[in-house]
Image 1 (cartoon, rainbow, N blue to C red):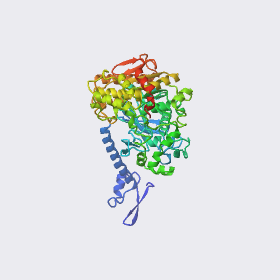
Image 2 (cartoon, rainbow, N blue to C red; image 1 turned 60 degrees about the vertical axis):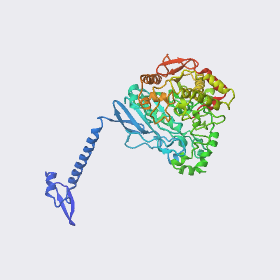
Image 3 (tube, rainbow, N blue to C red; image 1 turned 90 degrees about the vertical axis):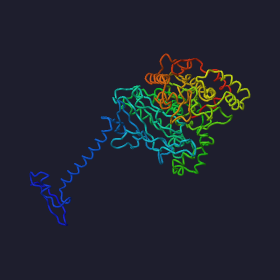
Image 4 (cartoon, one colour; image 1 turned 135 degrees about the horizontal axis):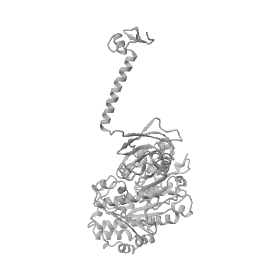
Length: 596
């Protein structure tokens, strides 16, 4: 006899059941069966449960395998724990990886909290096979917009062709645009992908960072309890925290922590410029590409805090406890979208109104930025001296011009609008502008030419010419090479579908270079032509070369000797738009350049 004794209750009586030596479990169960489902040994119950669970698990696995390619999941070990990612067509992707603590509750409007140092790392294996949500935002940018996203949003994504830790591949870290108010690091056609990774062989990282009031609200009230004694620029601190994560962990994804390129478009380009100037980002990256970023970056913390008092008035709060109790919708709808400081920035896609300025979102806070970028360069210390590319497109504002009917304009309309907008600045200015932007200019298409010339004029004054000046200042300050490009490519057709572009753009619009690099042209245009694809290949070729080497090929000389013109072919010119830029600079129009 064995010593196994089991107690079973039946009809309020106790019976002791003993398994005889050598007796099989099946025989044992049959011998001691008293009534259905009442008297079973614990061993029998365990075996039956295991059998049922095994069958269910097997059925689920077989159903999953039927629709999932084999060997599609992979594991890596970061400094915060194990990650479960996905492999598809030879490319590994890991999405929604936390890089800082959720900035919620008392952590709202505070610098990001490091997961590792604070003991907030996950336990077990973290599922990074699917993306997490975007940061809280409102679309469109006004009080009536739809609130989407979450405050718990500090995640990043990695794509890599290898998980060999000795591969040491160049790494490109993408900082998305969206006025510092909207979008995310996982926008289709506007972020890295498996396809881009496969074609270029680099490692890519994209990230979410706090946006709008959650990421950039400067208020004296928010200094209470702040470890930095500042307010605002929390989104930039998030970006720096993500770069620190990259430095610590990118080697396990096959990347080289000594060969990091940061690149961003629009407010992502402004972010790149910020990181170049911030002592907090020292040594975290080694090349930088600014695509259509801002030129104006000079607001003091005190000025911004005063400007943003309108937010307090709209929110109904007078103290920090009240601010922390606001819902995300209440925060977003208290933002001054349409009144000064005009965070929606609708004015920036038209010739300016004299004396009307957009207030700052990003500020010189004394912590992320110790001084304005231009003064930082002039003082000669504190900035990151790395190879720098500055790019713009020729018709930046054609992605969202201020006039819905601009595609129907006649040349008389064009002349009238230029005269109406510029006369308040100086009576002779409209005639000077019309001479430099004449109707006799060769238009790249057979129609919509007044739109083309007007958006070129606005873009020169707001973006192209100020960025020429930015590039000149960079070239004077940096020992590293500085390169300048202007996209002149006219797409084969107008944009007819895109979640990013609100207008049926026809010319070299804002986003064109980033869409080309991220393989988003086909989605934006419906289909691409051979010239569109050649333009895409040129953008890709030079960006990848720069990420790999920290310089451009000899065919692209450094600024200020030449500017590269990127279209379906590659050319360089000297003194691009010099006469036109001189007009805007001499008349003080750079103060109306893009901000944020």
